[in-house]
Length: 221
Ligand code: MG
Ligand code: ZN
Image (cartoon, rainbow, N blue to C red; front, side, top):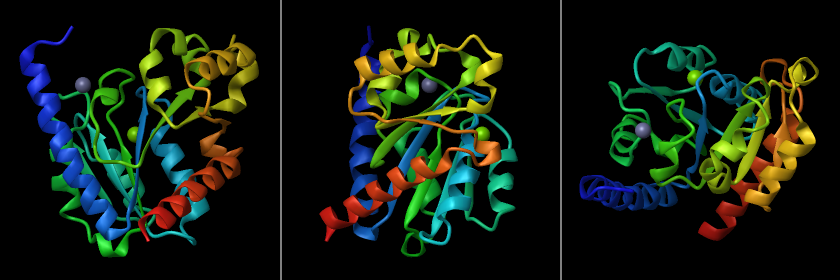
């Protein structure tokens, strides 16, 4: 149950998200909000995505973390513009943080903006950032039961990435059950099994993403 203060914050965020969405549309930037638990492999998945798509799209990244610049530095080391947001304790990103980060980027030089949200399976789902698609990552060691426990994030995500798939035989991870529960929660969301650090399975995910980017261009023009 939400108290009025939380409702006010969410309404303000939604208004600012609309402003972000208009800006992204005007500049022709496709925006992804990547959500997952800490350690699921968000940054590794972003690096694998960059490797696969950097010849096709000009990519930039916004890194959301409670503290540190570690992830932004990892991205920037690959020659990709990266902005670090430190939330100072907040467990999710909000539209005003995104706007301040975006204002430091040259959107005319960007086709794809990947936002790495703060590691958290709960409240990032409440905050529209003005993105085109919210995507989530679950890693195999977290267990196949997570869709039962955190249905909201599975319902809201347009695609689900199952990362660390190379470890699936070492864990008691019931892939069939996982896919079945995800499908029940969100029948249209594809599930991409990948091993981001090895680049395995990344092709299907990036082709899906590229198709979404191209579809958004058609809508805009
Ligand atoms: Mg990270
Ligand atoms: Zn939060």
